[in-house]
Image 1: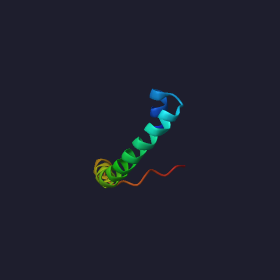
Image 2: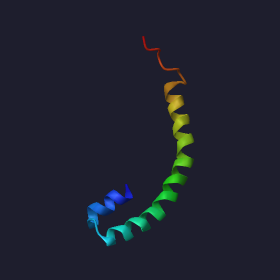
Image 3: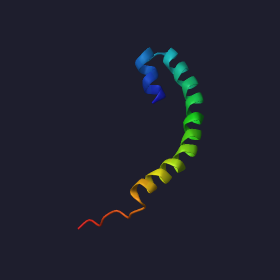
Image 4: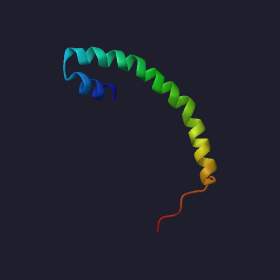
Length: 59
């Protein structure tokens, strides 16, 4: 996604590649850390909302 949005703003140039690599270096660890922290909370909340029911059998 960082590459796509960098290309939208800057076009397909060497400046875009530079912007993309700096965005990727910052965004990837942030997104990874965020997903590690938020995923268990989100799955717990979803389980509580659904009530830990098994999906209905398909006939």
